[in-house]
Amino acid sequence: MIKDGFFLEKIQVEGPYNFDLVLDRLSNDPLNQVNIEERSVKVPMLLNHEPVVAEVKAIGTTEQPEFLISGTDGPHKEKAAQRLSEIFQWHLPLETIHRHFQNTELRPIFEEHYGTPIVLDFDPYGCILKCIIHQQLNLAFAHTLTERFVKTFGFEKEGVWFYPLPEKVAELTVDDLRELQFSGRKAEYVIGIAKETAAGNINFDELKNLSDEEIYDKLIKLRGVGPWTVQNFLMFGLGRPNLFPAADIGIQNALKKLYKLEAKPTLEEMETFSKRWDPYLSYASLYLWRSIE
Image (tube, rainbow, N blue to C red; front, side, top):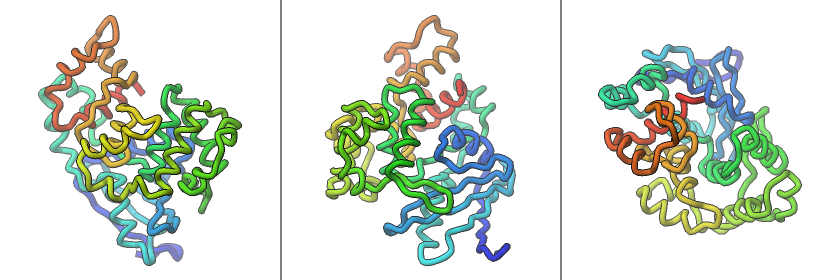
């Protein structure tokens, strides 16, 4: 399909899939180019080291999801289609997951946010940097700090921002990042991960083929990377379905609200609550976050 000189590809996926709730969540990050009225988002992707900007526009419903894709025509068309499917998790039947939670305490939340998928960060490398930057910060300042970092050292194409390449960040000094209000330690962590990536010691394409445990063992050795960071990376960098970051304050607050607890739940209580949610703990986490956002 060609419209106004642009090649458009139509994609149909299995429902339910609520793209409007996807856009609502994506719009929380000021770096994302989201148009709620047009039901669209622009997606920056590095394909074979080349920056590509795809636009994904919803034209269907939650029950019959359809999308128009533009900006991907050319030598990277096939790879772009594969990457967009990964990012938006179009291959995963959400109805199966929804049914799994119907006989659990999370049923009301899954009814309210019916058809909400896990959507990946647009770039796995950017995802782990964002996890580091967001550590121990309130969400508003975390987004502000990430935006400063990307707009100072990253690059722009078609109005969309790309995270700075590892080679660029590896050459920065701690003082460069402290000027943006990074702590000294956080600056060291970000530069250190960029150096490991630039040197080829971390290969994000290869990580996709490893188990959760293998990825954990590999990433936990990096300075600044703890269990919370690895769990968030597995969930939002790679789309792994069975992660439950029990140390996350948002999940603790959501459980406190759900179970009407006087205090935040203990780790033992959280383990008890979550047993029935396996093997879709990542979706339990997402919907718990949604319940307090």
